[in-house]
Length: 208
Image (cartoon, rainbow, N blue to C red; front, side, top):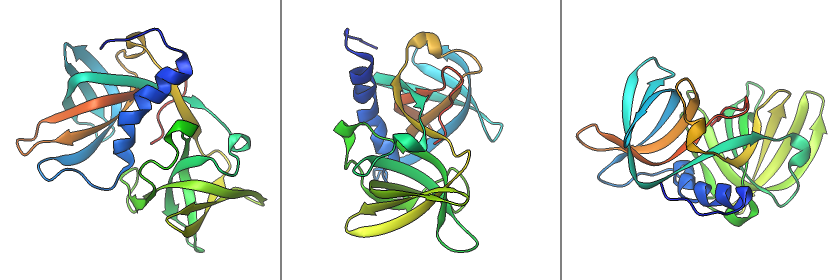
């Protein structure tokens, strides 16, 4: 990794730019898009070993120029109309969607991979990347109305839902046991590689 002396915010934005491919619905024809979630085991050269949340040990190849970022805790009060957010959600029994997590994108990334598509955080979950039209308080928490491609979608944000934004990270944060989220590609031969890693720091883990 090659680093230049830039501000922490700008560094986080730069790291997030390639990460946004993880929030798009399709992979390339040759490779399958995968998302690795789990705890770091070791880093050996350009290979990151992870124990996944499913209990498997997998090796992820780090591509040339790979980037590292973290997430910082935010709150529903930080979300304003006009903000661009990524919300993983599940259908609710009574109708509508309930959020599993909310990611607030930096303004420079507004509009990237806009839309709503299947997500693998939990079975039947959806990822919606959209602009906040309004936010209202409800009895059981809050709700956001978001818009994408001319469509409105209301998503309830229950109390306790993880809400984060991008933050900078260093190699010192990438240590055994650290929680990681890795959007990557799996080749036809089954080899996983990535251009970006998100690592948990300061008690805040990637909720994506």
